Amino acid sequence: MSINDFPVLSALRTKMQWHQERQRVLSENVSNSDTPNFKPRDLVAPKFDATGAVAGGMAPLALAHTSGVTIASTSDGGASFDQNRKAGFETRPTGNAVNLEDEMLKVSANQMDYAAATSLYSKSLHLLKTAIGKG
Image (cartoon, rainbow, N blue to C red; front, side, top):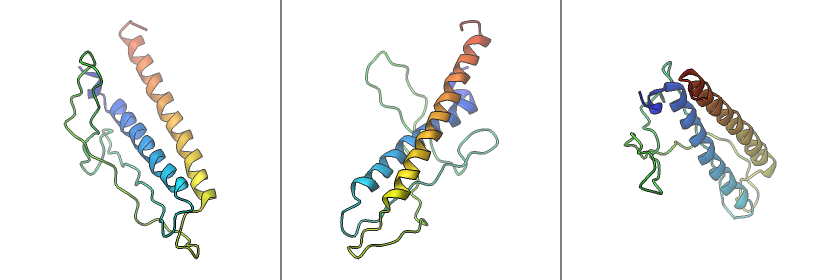
C-alpha cells in the first residue's frame, strides 16, 4: 500500500498545498495595496468528504519532479484552487480595495493553520513508521 493511499495523509497534503497557494494570493494582495483599481482575492477552502478526499471532484495537485531519483507521483491532476469571489471589500478613492490589516490577519491565520497541518502530517508519518517498526 502506497502512502498516497492513506486518506488522512492525502487530505493533509491537499490542505498544505491550499495554504501555500493562499499565501501566494494573500502576498499578492499586500504587494498591490497601492495599485489603483486593484481588488483583493482569496481562495475557497477545500471541502473534504468522510473519506478524506476533496469533495466536489477536485483532482490533487501535480508534483514537480526535480530529479530522476525522486518517487513518482500517482496523481494525474494539475488542478488549481477556486477563488472566493464573494469576499466583501471597501474601496478607496483610487479604486484600491486592499485593507492591509485584514490581509495581515489572514496571512498570520494561514501561517498558523499551515503549521498545524504540517505538524499533523509529520506526526502521522512518525506513527506509521512506528507501526511498521522503522521508527
